[in-house]
Structures are given as C-alpha cells and as structure tokens.
Image (cartoon, rainbow, N blue to C red; front, side, top):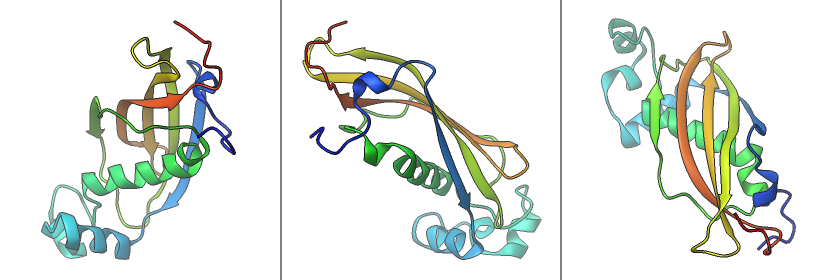
Length: 156
C-alpha cells in the first residue's frame, strides 16, 4: 500500500503544513450541488441569495466541505498512505462562499501517534483553514485520519 506513495505516517509531523488550492467557485457548481443535495433558495438563485443574510449566490456549507476535501485530495491525500478517517471533530462555516470566490488554505498537522492497538498504523490529527481571495477565513475544521507507517518498527 506504500508503493508509489510520497507520504507515510512518519511524514506527518506536528507543524507540517500542506497548501490547498486555489479552487475557483463557479455559480454553475454551486447550483448543481445545491440542486442535488441542499436545494435552499440562497444556493439556487442569485436574487434569493442577495436577499438572504449570505449576500449572494452562496455555496452550501456542505458543498464548502466537499470543496475542502477535493483540495486536500489534490494536495496530499492521494499521495499518501491514508487509510481513511474515523470522523470529523468539528466544522465551522465562518463566512459565505460566494460564486466567483477563489478558495485556498492550509491543512496543518497538529499531532500524530502510532496506534498501539493496530501495529503499522498511525493516527494523525489535522486542522484545515480555508480562505477566500480576500484572505477571509470562510471555513475551519479538525479531524483525525489513519495512515500507514513506513517503518513498522516505530512505537509510541
């Protein structure tokens, strides 16, 4: 599972930062996602969005999470020995993501430890921060994920 992978558990040391994006957000993408998964007016129609507290055609918060995941995939996940995640500790939607925004951000390793119960597997805690083109924080999240160890002899 480590063949052809750049990042193993040992590469996720606290303080390591992975850069995310840029990711341009289009009106068409917002409407397509909302039509399928969150068909509220402010996600489907520019005028309805302008009349809402969001101030324009805005991506669903869940869509924002999906865009964040895509950026993580493109930045490091597919190039790692990731084994998935047991969940998400929190997600915060801080500002609306509007049509025309260009998102970028960081995914930072907070902590990492090999698992005693699963030799060869480690748990990495990450924090994501997502910004728009004005460098305004639009979303933040934290989550653990599992990743294979390169050196099976590592212990905590």
